[in-house]
Image (cartoon, rainbow, N blue to C red; front, side, top):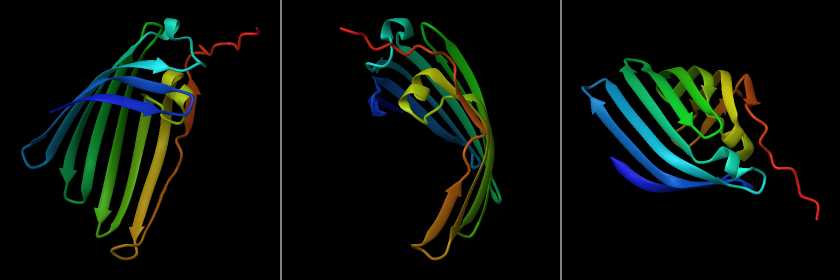
Length: 161
């Protein structure tokens, strides 16, 4: 269990607030994790009186398999102006120093930019692969998600003085 004070800076948007994380191995093949938190947004680009603070919860279950793992993630956030629930699934195959992972997300929290973190969600398919040439050298890449979109337009208009 971990209790902390989180702070993230997306450049133009900061999030601040308490976080709680609990993780545990169940048997030899299952790993479960729960993360919760409450953040407030600090940005001149957003109207925080409309947004309010955000409470979020993420649950992740991962099953170890002989050649990799399978994971399912559920996440939810509540805010004064909007709620969001998302789900993700991923399958990873590993052999030696090589890995291939495919996944799908539906309405997950977006982390592309600060404004997308506050106002958006992410849905799509992705593919990640890595190849180890040696113990030190590795080539990795990840395809972008198919789609990301803002949910609401709560951007403050610049005031003219």
